[in-house]
Structures are given as structure tokens and as C-alpha cells.
Length: 236
Image (cartoon, rainbow, N blue to C red; front, top):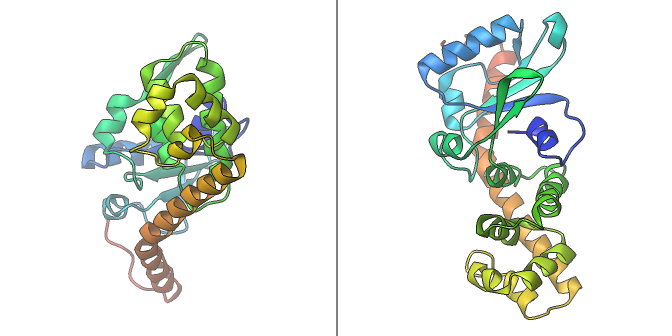
């Protein structure tokens, strides 16, 4: 669901870790526990690997020590802000198969990945922009209603957003209820005004993400405080 997914969608060249969103059932967490044991992985930082933290929205961070994955980091979450339930994510997922490998890789669908990237972190917004732009350049000659709707909802490059609205004006009119700044494009507003509207849109999403993480950060601060004082270990 993170940088590796962005690589596979063609919007990045490298990522230093692997991020997963999982179904946090007891049996699935046991499977994950065994997988991490096979990778000789240890939990780093806080919180500990417990279902209650995953269900609340925390990420659990692992560092691998297996020789074939030495120092690789794995981050696991069960809930993402503004993103659908796991069951819906799984139903909409993108599955990649490779000619020289027997396995498959399940990725968040592109719309879900873009939604997951709407965080307060500076590094996520350029990646979000590249994901949508890459989708447009890869599929401009083979558009579907779903793809056009996705570009209209998520495009962050002003010139390309203008181009999408020019090519599919009826789709753009229908999408103004979901994204009011499209009215500015349809009214032939200036590029500067559109850039400001996009910046305002980003600012609202960053603020929403900060508000979402505020109580979770308090949890982590308390856990670090308890750890520093040598408090009792968390229950398994």
C-alpha cells in the first residue's frame, strides 16, 4: 500500500520499505507473526504488535534480520484514514502476475492508494500527483468512465486537469459536486486561481490527517513514556 505499490504503478523508482494493510483477525495476525519470524524480524519503536493498536489505526513497524532481507523495514496497518474497509479494499485490489515468478502481488487499487496518500507528510503529495499523472499518460488513449472520473477527482497537475475537463466536459460537470474546484476549470479560470484552489484542497486534507493522528500520537507518547520508565510490558 506504500512506496512499493507506487513503484509497481510506475510512479516511483525505489522504496526503502514495504507497507501492508491487513485484515486484523486472530488467525491472520498469527500468520503475520509467523511470516515475521521467518524474516527474523523484530518490532521497532512503538506500538507493540497487538491487535488493539492495529484496530485503533496505529502502524506496527518491523525490522528484518534474515540475510536475504537484512535491515529491510516492514510496516503494517489495519485501518487507514479516509479509506474503505479492508473487505472493500480487497474486492477492488489490483493483482499483478509475473512471467518469471509463480506468485502474485496484490496492491491497493490505484484510487485507494491515492486516497491513502492524502496525509500531512510532504513526501506523499508529489507521489500522489505522479500516480495520477502516470495513470493519465498510460490510459489517455483508452479511457473508461471510471478512469476519467478518477482523473477528475484526483488530478493535481493544473494543465492536465484542464486537459481532462476539455476532453470530457460532461464528465467534468457531473463531478463538480464531488470536487467543486472543477467549476473553476469549466469557467476558464486562471491557472493561478486553479493552483491556489489545489493548494487549499491539499491544506484541508493535511489538516484532516493531523486531526486524525492527534489522539494516536498521544497513545504513542504514553507508550514511550511508560517504556522509558520501565513500566510493565503490554499484554499479548
